[in-house]
Length: 172
Length: 172
DNA sequence: TATTGTTATACTCTATAACTATA
DNA sequence: TATAGTTATAGAGTATAACAATA
Image 1: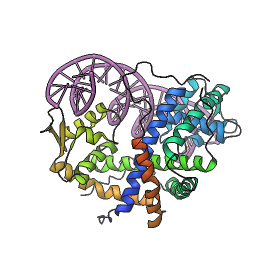
Image 2: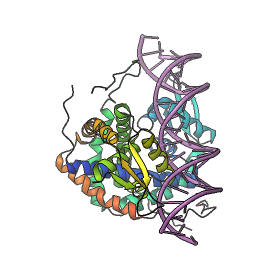
Image 3: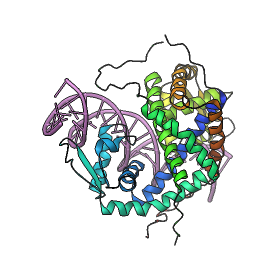
């Protein structure tokens, strides 16, 4: 019998809705730009960016790639499949673990990324950062960093995908 | 011939990705909760919340509802249709403008909202606000408020849906 | 037995364009 | 002619479950 939690105070409620609105509008704009400039979905862009910018080798295991980008394995397989079909990545069995698949960005993938990046930057700068000072941006980053870590380390509350029924939060 | 815009500095880049990550994780969690607790999508929840919490009368014109919640008219029609089918809202011709449609939340809609709200609050509190002080939340709200306004007032850059080809940003 | 990844499938959501009706 | 909304339709994306293969 869960006790009714205290409702969000107006300040937090406002912060929550502002966050969702801003992210939603930004994502919509960014997806449009990515689509028009390079036929990429945002998820595909994230995958390419991880491979091309984050990784020195240009490679990642599927599992590592999934982290934070996608919420189901099959979703990642789907997106990676699209990228592969477009010639932007290759997939090959991981050398050390035969179960694993290593995804590697191709030259075409890097080229596509480079093609898309300026416009992407432009949209983000214009939409998100135009009304923010550099100090604001820094403050924003520092506010959100611990939240991101917290979210990533917090179990999704239905951690075990093996359970059959799952806990139905039903109750009254 | 657009000059290559200056790339985002690391601070802004970090803020951007943190924002997108946080919002994405939060939305995912929230959608799951809404679905489990009340068979609602996030968009449907937003619509109900606007009608039930924002509006004193419990009514809104479609056009007003669309604002910021949905990016195409047909999308709103679709979601409003689902809500109506579920008995959570009603739709009727607007009294003053025969073209318009007024959407009104029903008692069942309010009940559903009340049913879902505690769990919703709980998820947001736990995921988003646990690592933030009240002052942090306030700072976040104040940083995002002008961004939201800016985004809302910035034309989507392809304002005219009448154009056929559209400008292909192609050319490298 | 646990983990990695794929496949099949079903479903939700979104967007475009064509259309109707009122202002 | 412009605006409000609906419909038809098509496509993209997601998630679940069953499956195969390796650790």
